[in-house]
Length: 331
Image 1: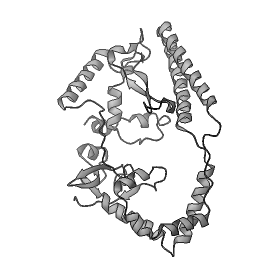
Image 2: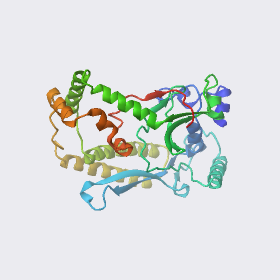
Image 3: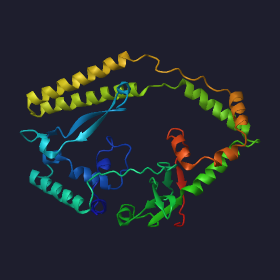
């Protein structure tokens, strides 16, 4: 693998070469995503490139346009890219070599029967998706259904072995979801047991008080603020494009569009009410205790719902810290 060879040759990865711009990334080894990003970046040819993406707006609900829309960026075909007339910086590879590498990638993707970066969505609920990490390598374990059992697995092939030569790791680590959920249900049931109920109620009361003072935003407000930030980034890029010799007529049109979008988002934000929704008052410890008593047997309530309901009710912000896992036998 290319990334493993780069690591063995002692070539610093991007995060090690420029740690100030990559403080959140590991600085010891090359990653496959970093190699791919370099191979797909047309700026490596020495020319500045614009119009690689376009903004698309889709209604959140076609039956209720008042809910607003969602803005997303979509890749434009290479034929629609706009390159600077003159080189803007030192080239790493020639344009011909870059085009050849792109052609090879496209042919390989067609051979494998998939498009590059094609995501796969599953309707199956995975209760612990994104919350399970391997205790050996620290990476998130990926959900999968194996022999009719929902599992989380961490694959460690030859590529990872080259990146982490000092790590002893089985080729695949499996963890059954039902085993973990059963343990979690038991832990929650114990937390609401009579001898621990007081401490649990106090913790929930503190959490309720903190939630009542947190800032709340509607989806429309969040979207408007994000649009403003995106427009500011666009304006910065367009200004840089002018300085590198891009066509002033084209860039001026881009700037006008960005400024118009930014002004529209500002006006939309101002039109929204200052208080988006009335916050519920925090629950007191006594109120939480009364609710707990009204639910009856806590253990029975926890074990009754289906996994799909548990998956819908959990959110990353409400979940505990990622669970470390040990090696488990394959089911």
